[in-house]
View 1 (cartoon, helix red, strand yellow):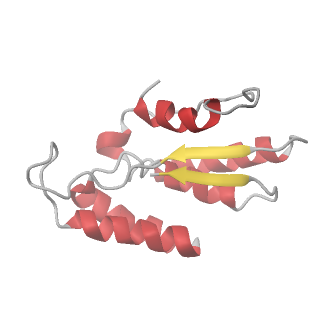
View 2 (view 1 turned 45 degrees about the vertical axis):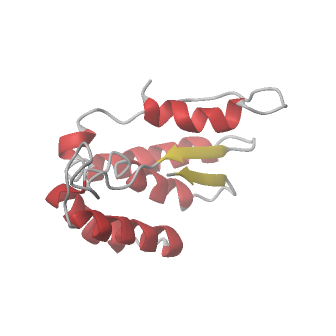
Length: 142
């Protein structure tokens, strides 16, 4: 379990209620260098996840850690890429409109240029899950 799984978990377990049943889903470490190529498989994973969760007759809370670009500053651990701001803006437009071209085209292009977003891989899964027929409570922790 990495930081991407641990951080959202704290929002669920730090409550005064009995902790809910939790399923942790993590994307592979190949996300760091091959995230754009992984999109078709991640869309399939999103469809499978949505189908499985739709079949449940209980309330679902879907929490995702979705770090955006890590290349905003030359002094940072990943250096600078002017693609970082463009990537983050494309993700913001996607989140506010759910228009998939912002993720499939714009964000993918900037990720391929070096935005270095480890959260990019959860956006295709989340897109499909969000389109599900269930009224899920939905959260992306950035």
